Image (cartoon, rainbow, N blue to C red; front, top):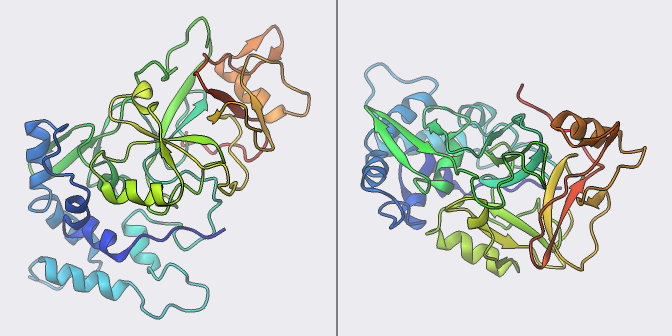
Amino acid sequence: MRVNQPPLALILGVVVSTALLTACGAAGSSNTSRAAAEASSQWPATASATMEESIDATPSPGAESSSASASATMEESIDATPSPGAESGISTATSDKLGMAGWDERAPASVPETATLTLHVGKRQLTAQRLANGRELSMQDDRALPLYPWISCTFGCRTDGPRLWFNLPSADGPLAFTAPTTEVPGALSWQIMLSKYNWPAEGFESAYPNQVVFTGIQSDCSICDTSFTERGFTRVALGDQVGSGIKSWLAPAKWPAPDSPMIGELRLFRAGTALPSGWIVSDGRALAAKDEGLSYLLKGAGFVQGDAARTPTMPKVTGYTWAIAAEGDYPDFDN
Protein backbone atom coordinates (compact mmCIF):
# COMPACT_ATOMS: atom_id res chain seq x y z
CA MET A 1 0.00 0.00 0.00
CA ARG A 2 1.56 3.29 -1.04
CA VAL A 3 2.18 6.15 1.34
CA ASN A 4 0.75 9.56 0.47
CA GLN A 5 3.60 11.93 -0.33
CA PRO A 6 3.29 15.60 0.66
CA PRO A 7 3.56 18.13 -2.18
CA LEU A 8 6.77 20.16 -2.35
CA ALA A 9 4.82 23.39 -1.81
CA LEU A 10 3.54 22.01 1.48
CA ILE A 11 7.01 21.09 2.71
CA LEU A 12 8.37 24.52 1.85
CA GLY A 13 5.33 26.11 3.45
CA VAL A 14 5.97 24.28 6.71
CA VAL A 15 9.59 25.33 6.76
CA VAL A 16 9.93 28.86 5.43
CA SER A 17 6.65 30.34 4.32
CA THR A 18 2.93 30.50 4.79
CA ALA A 19 2.06 29.37 1.26
CA LEU A 20 -0.12 26.52 2.41
CA LEU A 21 -1.54 28.53 5.28
CA THR A 22 -2.60 31.25 2.86
CA ALA A 23 -4.17 28.69 0.51
CA CYS A 24 -6.11 27.21 3.38
CA GLY A 25 -7.11 30.60 4.76
CA ALA A 26 -5.48 30.03 8.11
CA ALA A 27 -4.59 33.65 8.77
CA GLY A 28 -7.50 35.81 9.81
CA SER A 29 -10.02 33.00 10.22
CA SER A 30 -13.32 34.25 11.59
CA ASN A 31 -13.18 31.54 14.22
CA THR A 32 -9.76 32.66 15.49
CA SER A 33 -9.42 35.17 18.30
CA ARG A 34 -7.38 38.38 17.96
CA ALA A 35 -4.50 36.78 19.89
CA ALA A 36 -4.60 33.70 17.71
CA ALA A 37 -4.56 35.83 14.58
CA GLU A 38 -1.58 37.75 15.87
CA ALA A 39 0.20 34.48 16.68
CA SER A 40 -0.47 33.18 13.20
CA SER A 41 0.76 36.41 11.62
CA GLN A 42 3.99 36.24 13.60
CA TRP A 43 4.74 32.70 12.42
CA PRO A 44 6.76 33.62 9.32
CA ALA A 45 8.71 36.31 11.16
CA THR A 46 9.51 34.36 14.34
CA ALA A 47 9.11 30.62 14.27
CA SER A 48 10.30 30.44 10.65
CA ALA A 49 13.74 31.75 11.56
CA THR A 50 14.04 29.12 14.27
CA MET A 51 12.87 26.43 11.89
CA GLU A 52 15.42 27.43 9.26
CA GLU A 53 18.21 27.05 11.79
CA SER A 54 17.01 23.63 12.91
CA ILE A 55 16.68 22.30 9.37
CA ASP A 56 20.05 23.45 8.07
CA ALA A 57 22.29 20.68 9.42
CA THR A 58 25.54 22.41 8.40
CA PRO A 59 25.03 26.19 8.41
CA SER A 60 27.89 28.39 7.23
CA PRO A 61 29.37 30.68 9.90
CA GLY A 62 27.55 34.00 9.82
CA ALA A 63 25.15 32.89 7.11
CA GLU A 64 21.90 34.87 7.16
CA SER A 65 18.57 33.02 7.21
CA SER A 66 16.27 33.85 4.35
CA SER A 67 13.36 32.31 2.49
CA ALA A 68 15.46 32.04 -0.65
CA SER A 69 18.39 30.26 1.01
CA ALA A 70 16.12 27.98 3.02
CA SER A 71 14.16 27.12 -0.11
CA ALA A 72 17.39 26.25 -1.89
CA THR A 73 18.41 24.04 1.02
CA MET A 74 15.06 22.25 0.91
CA GLU A 75 15.23 21.79 -2.85
CA GLU A 76 18.68 20.24 -2.54
CA SER A 77 17.39 17.83 0.10
CA ILE A 78 14.64 16.64 -2.21
CA ASP A 79 16.34 14.33 -4.64
CA ALA A 80 15.02 14.93 -8.14
CA THR A 81 16.33 11.54 -9.22
CA PRO A 82 15.88 9.26 -6.23
CA SER A 83 17.62 5.93 -6.11
CA PRO A 84 15.54 2.83 -6.93
CA GLY A 85 13.06 2.20 -4.17
CA ALA A 86 13.25 5.71 -2.69
CA GLU A 87 9.70 6.71 -3.55
CA SER A 88 9.42 9.78 -1.36
CA GLY A 89 12.40 11.65 -2.84
CA ILE A 90 13.01 13.14 0.62
CA SER A 91 16.37 12.53 2.25
CA THR A 92 16.43 10.61 5.52
CA ALA A 93 18.15 13.50 7.30
CA THR A 94 15.52 15.98 6.17
CA SER A 95 12.59 13.71 7.02
CA ASP A 96 14.01 13.07 10.48
CA LYS A 97 14.40 16.82 11.15
CA LEU A 98 10.83 17.54 10.06
CA GLY A 99 9.37 14.70 12.10
CA MET A 100 8.52 12.93 8.84
CA ALA A 101 10.25 9.62 9.55
CA GLY A 102 8.31 6.93 7.78
CA TRP A 103 7.40 8.78 4.58
CA ASP A 104 9.80 6.57 2.69
CA GLU A 105 8.43 3.41 4.29
CA ARG A 106 5.50 1.20 3.43
CA ALA A 107 3.02 2.33 6.06
CA PRO A 108 -0.23 0.41 6.54
CA ALA A 109 -3.14 2.29 5.01
CA SER A 110 -5.00 1.89 8.30
CA VAL A 111 -2.56 4.33 9.97
CA PRO A 112 -4.63 7.53 10.41
CA GLU A 113 -3.80 10.56 8.31
CA THR A 114 -2.37 13.70 9.88
CA ALA A 115 -5.01 15.64 11.89
CA THR A 116 -7.42 12.66 11.90
CA LEU A 117 -9.15 11.98 15.22
CA THR A 118 -9.79 8.40 16.34
CA LEU A 119 -11.55 6.91 19.37
CA HIS A 120 -9.78 4.24 21.42
CA VAL A 121 -10.34 2.04 24.46
CA GLY A 122 -8.43 3.35 27.47
CA LYS A 123 -6.60 6.59 28.21
CA ARG A 124 -3.07 5.64 27.19
CA GLN A 125 -1.55 7.83 24.49
CA LEU A 126 -0.77 6.03 21.25
CA THR A 127 2.53 6.39 19.43
CA ALA A 128 2.60 9.43 17.07
CA GLN A 129 -0.74 10.61 18.46
CA ARG A 130 -1.83 13.00 21.19
CA LEU A 131 -4.92 13.04 23.37
CA ALA A 132 -7.49 15.47 22.01
CA ASN A 133 -7.67 17.46 25.23
CA GLY A 134 -6.95 21.00 24.00
CA ARG A 135 -3.32 21.02 25.17
CA GLU A 136 -0.74 23.31 23.58
CA LEU A 137 2.04 22.11 21.29
CA SER A 138 5.13 24.09 20.40
CA MET A 139 6.24 24.68 16.84
CA GLN A 140 9.74 23.81 18.06
CA ASP A 141 8.60 20.25 18.68
CA ASP A 142 9.59 18.39 15.51
CA ARG A 143 6.87 15.81 16.08
CA ALA A 144 4.16 18.47 16.16
CA LEU A 145 5.51 20.54 13.27
CA PRO A 146 3.77 18.76 10.35
CA LEU A 147 0.38 19.02 12.10
CA TYR A 148 0.28 22.83 12.23
CA PRO A 149 -0.39 23.57 8.52
CA TRP A 150 -3.48 21.35 8.69
CA ILE A 151 -5.11 22.69 11.86
CA SER A 152 -3.34 26.07 12.17
CA CYS A 153 -5.00 28.23 14.87
CA THR A 154 -8.41 26.58 14.58
CA PHE A 155 -8.30 25.60 18.26
CA GLY A 156 -6.20 28.51 19.51
CA CYS A 157 -2.68 29.95 19.21
CA ARG A 158 -0.34 32.16 21.19
CA THR A 159 3.22 33.43 21.00
CA ASP A 160 5.85 33.42 23.69
CA GLY A 161 8.76 35.50 22.44
CA PRO A 162 10.02 33.73 19.29
CA ARG A 163 7.98 30.62 19.98
CA LEU A 164 4.57 29.84 18.53
CA TRP A 165 2.20 27.55 20.39
CA PHE A 166 -0.98 26.05 18.93
CA ASN A 167 -3.78 24.09 20.56
CA LEU A 168 -5.05 20.61 19.82
CA PRO A 169 -8.81 20.07 19.53
CA SER A 170 -10.70 19.34 22.72
CA ALA A 171 -13.04 16.35 22.67
CA ASP A 172 -15.69 17.62 25.08
CA GLY A 173 -18.95 17.28 23.14
CA PRO A 174 -21.82 14.76 23.42
CA LEU A 175 -19.81 12.17 21.46
CA ALA A 176 -16.61 12.67 23.45
CA PHE A 177 -17.11 9.78 25.92
CA THR A 178 -13.92 10.83 27.70
CA ALA A 179 -15.51 10.61 31.15
CA PRO A 180 -17.20 7.41 32.40
CA THR A 181 -21.00 7.50 32.39
CA THR A 182 -23.78 5.05 33.15
CA GLU A 183 -23.92 4.04 29.49
CA VAL A 184 -20.15 4.05 28.94
CA PRO A 185 -18.72 3.14 32.36
CA GLY A 186 -15.14 2.55 31.23
CA ALA A 187 -12.47 4.83 29.83
CA LEU A 188 -12.29 5.92 26.16
CA SER A 189 -10.11 8.57 24.55
CA TRP A 190 -10.15 10.63 21.37
CA GLN A 191 -6.65 11.06 19.94
CA ILE A 192 -5.30 13.10 17.03
CA MET A 193 -2.58 11.96 14.63
CA LEU A 194 0.47 14.23 14.52
CA SER A 195 2.29 13.20 11.34
CA LYS A 196 4.05 9.85 11.19
CA TYR A 197 3.04 8.58 7.76
CA ASN A 198 0.06 9.75 5.74
CA TRP A 199 -1.17 13.17 4.67
CA PRO A 200 -4.91 13.69 4.07
CA ALA A 201 -4.54 15.60 0.80
CA GLU A 202 -5.76 12.68 -1.32
CA GLY A 203 -8.67 11.51 0.77
CA PHE A 204 -8.62 9.35 3.86
CA GLU A 205 -6.93 6.09 2.92
CA SER A 206 -7.31 4.88 6.50
CA ALA A 207 -11.12 5.01 6.21
CA TYR A 208 -13.37 2.03 5.58
CA PRO A 209 -16.35 2.15 3.21
CA ASN A 210 -19.36 3.87 4.81
CA GLN A 211 -17.29 5.07 7.78
CA VAL A 212 -17.38 8.53 9.34
CA VAL A 213 -13.95 10.21 9.54
CA PHE A 214 -13.36 12.91 12.14
CA THR A 215 -10.64 15.49 11.49
CA GLY A 216 -9.22 18.67 12.94
CA ILE A 217 -8.38 20.16 9.53
CA GLN A 218 -9.10 23.88 9.56
CA SER A 219 -12.50 25.01 8.29
CA ASP A 220 -11.12 27.34 5.62
CA CYS A 221 -9.09 24.69 3.81
CA SER A 222 -10.98 24.73 0.52
CA ILE A 223 -8.23 22.66 -1.11
CA CYS A 224 -8.93 19.86 1.34
CA ASP A 225 -12.70 20.04 0.93
CA THR A 226 -12.41 19.90 -2.86
CA SER A 227 -10.04 16.95 -2.69
CA PHE A 228 -12.31 14.95 -0.40
CA THR A 229 -15.46 15.76 -2.37
CA GLU A 230 -13.85 14.73 -5.65
CA ARG A 231 -13.09 11.34 -4.11
CA GLY A 232 -16.68 10.75 -3.04
CA PHE A 233 -16.52 11.81 0.61
CA THR A 234 -19.58 13.64 1.96
CA ARG A 235 -19.67 16.17 4.79
CA VAL A 236 -21.85 15.08 7.70
CA ALA A 237 -22.85 17.13 10.75
CA LEU A 238 -21.27 15.03 13.50
CA GLY A 239 -17.86 16.60 14.10
CA ASP A 240 -19.08 19.36 16.44
CA GLN A 241 -20.66 16.66 18.62
CA VAL A 242 -17.14 15.42 19.35
CA GLY A 243 -15.73 18.89 19.91
CA SER A 244 -15.92 22.45 18.63
CA GLY A 245 -14.16 22.97 15.30
CA ILE A 246 -13.92 19.26 14.45
CA LYS A 247 -15.18 18.24 11.00
CA SER A 248 -16.58 14.91 9.83
CA TRP A 249 -16.75 13.16 6.47
CA LEU A 250 -18.56 10.00 5.36
CA ALA A 251 -16.50 7.68 3.15
CA PRO A 252 -18.16 6.42 -0.05
CA ALA A 253 -19.58 2.91 -0.21
CA LYS A 254 -16.98 1.84 -2.78
CA TRP A 255 -13.97 3.27 -0.97
CA PRO A 256 -11.18 0.63 -0.78
CA ALA A 257 -10.79 -0.93 2.67
CA PRO A 258 -7.41 -0.37 4.36
CA ASP A 259 -5.11 -2.93 5.97
CA SER A 260 -5.43 -4.34 9.47
CA PRO A 261 -7.09 -1.95 11.96
CA MET A 262 -5.84 -1.24 15.46
CA ILE A 263 -7.43 -3.46 18.10
CA GLY A 264 -9.59 -1.46 20.50
CA GLU A 265 -10.34 1.39 18.09
CA LEU A 266 -13.98 2.43 17.72
CA ARG A 267 -15.34 3.76 14.44
CA LEU A 268 -18.75 4.99 13.35
CA PHE A 269 -20.35 3.34 10.30
CA ARG A 270 -23.48 4.07 8.32
CA ALA A 271 -26.33 1.97 9.76
CA GLY A 272 -27.53 -0.97 7.68
CA THR A 273 -24.19 -1.57 5.96
CA ALA A 274 -21.98 -4.61 6.46
CA LEU A 275 -19.12 -4.12 8.88
CA PRO A 276 -15.58 -4.83 7.69
CA SER A 277 -13.94 -8.10 8.65
CA GLY A 278 -12.60 -8.03 12.21
CA TRP A 279 -15.08 -5.42 13.44
CA ILE A 280 -18.01 -6.08 15.79
CA VAL A 281 -20.90 -3.91 16.94
CA SER A 282 -20.03 -2.13 20.20
CA ASP A 283 -23.25 -2.67 22.13
CA GLY A 284 -22.18 -4.27 25.41
CA ARG A 285 -21.87 -7.80 24.04
CA ALA A 286 -19.52 -10.34 25.59
CA LEU A 287 -16.43 -11.21 23.58
CA ALA A 288 -15.57 -14.49 21.95
CA ALA A 289 -12.71 -16.51 23.44
CA LYS A 290 -10.53 -15.76 20.41
CA ASP A 291 -10.60 -12.00 21.03
CA GLU A 292 -7.89 -12.08 23.70
CA GLY A 293 -6.18 -8.83 22.69
CA LEU A 294 -9.37 -6.78 22.79
CA SER A 295 -10.46 -8.52 25.99
CA TYR A 296 -7.23 -7.45 27.70
CA LEU A 297 -7.66 -3.82 26.62
CA LEU A 298 -11.32 -3.70 27.65
CA LYS A 299 -10.66 -5.14 31.09
CA GLY A 300 -7.86 -2.65 31.66
CA ALA A 301 -10.19 0.22 30.71
CA GLY A 302 -13.03 -0.91 32.99
CA PHE A 303 -15.33 -2.55 30.45
CA VAL A 304 -15.92 -5.74 32.40
CA GLN A 305 -18.86 -7.52 33.98
CA GLY A 306 -17.89 -10.20 36.47
CA ASP A 307 -14.89 -11.89 34.88
CA ALA A 308 -15.96 -11.22 31.30
CA ALA A 309 -14.91 -8.31 29.12
CA ARG A 310 -17.68 -6.58 27.22
CA THR A 311 -17.66 -4.05 24.42
CA PRO A 312 -18.71 -0.53 25.40
CA THR A 313 -22.45 0.09 25.19
CA MET A 314 -22.21 3.12 22.96
CA PRO A 315 -25.08 5.65 22.88
CA LYS A 316 -27.06 5.58 19.65
CA VAL A 317 -26.29 7.99 16.86
CA THR A 318 -29.25 8.18 14.47
CA GLY A 319 -28.37 6.58 11.14
CA TYR A 320 -25.04 5.17 12.33
CA THR A 321 -23.57 2.22 14.24
CA TRP A 322 -20.54 2.14 16.53
CA ALA A 323 -18.19 -0.78 15.94
CA ILE A 324 -14.95 -1.84 17.60
CA ALA A 325 -11.93 -3.57 16.08
CA ALA A 326 -11.53 -7.04 17.59
CA GLU A 327 -8.84 -8.18 15.16
CA GLY A 328 -5.78 -6.50 13.70
CA ASP A 329 -2.64 -4.94 15.17
CA TYR A 330 -2.20 -4.50 18.91
CA PRO A 331 -1.77 -0.78 19.72
CA ASP A 332 1.64 0.70 20.32
CA PHE A 333 1.67 3.14 23.25
CA ASP A 334 3.96 6.04 24.09
CA ASN A 335 4.14 4.93 27.71
